[in-house]
Image (spheres, rainbow, N blue to C red):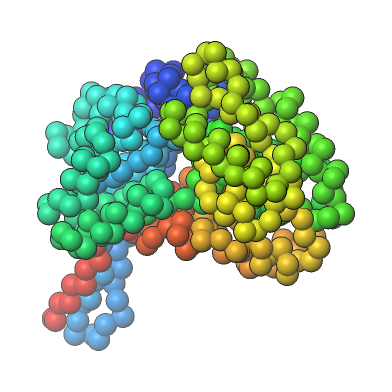
Length: 412
């Protein structure tokens, strides 16, 4: 498939579709989501003839080859927070390894996936290689999960829904399942950081980017007690002055609305829970711009959070940051790992030893140092514990999960 045709030449249209349906800031869609989607397709297409099968060191009278073959028909279920981008993270390696793809977008955000199918057909993709099936999770999603002729399902979404696909597989044809699920990612700030302004920018970005509707959202901030007040002042200033709330079609907007009314109420209920359990609200905490009809929530920061509070343990999927302090390296590693999730983590330190030790000690699929990042297309993305199951998105390593491994043993 021509990546330029499917992504670059149609970028403005695809960005607008995702912004309109998901409420994402148009600047994020134009500058990040759609370019990354086209780059994903281009990357996996380039990898097709760079990955080789192998020959085993068999006896001299035998030729033993180890080859990878397509799984067959793959069903991909993608979420509403990054509609086209997550579709491309699936489509790229699935098609590059020779499979056919049945793609089910989230019911809230199906337009960019449907447009993708049109562009694929126009670009010359053979009929039946890519099918887009919009619908509800309970019907279309379950039908894909239980279908006897679908060989594999690759799912991105909540841990709660991910469990269903394991059940569907067990009750049907034992199809292969890959799950990329929720997170409660920690951001660790040590007292030796060199540039507190830069740290505050990364912390705010980790917590509030995409309205916190992000599985790797850095929603737990662990900051050393010696620099806590200094950092919080800067993060609060950025939350109130820089992270502008408003119309997602305005290029200056950085915080759009929640995806739908039900999700707005869920996020507000978590904020109320934080107040009831004794956390100290530093900024935000309310719905705003209700007169517009949009589901806007202020970037929200809680201090004095304890590890047993709901806002510290459960995935909120909104712009809510929970702050906890620490004194020692061992203490903060234990606190950061005290979660059912393990998708991502961030460390801020000027000490190379701390960076190496803590990166290894954190139980997370991606650990970024002195930044908030999910890596790029060359690095795998997925989680430990209840953040992931079996596979990874991105990088050439994503190809392996969409193939079957075969041994061919030829006696001469």
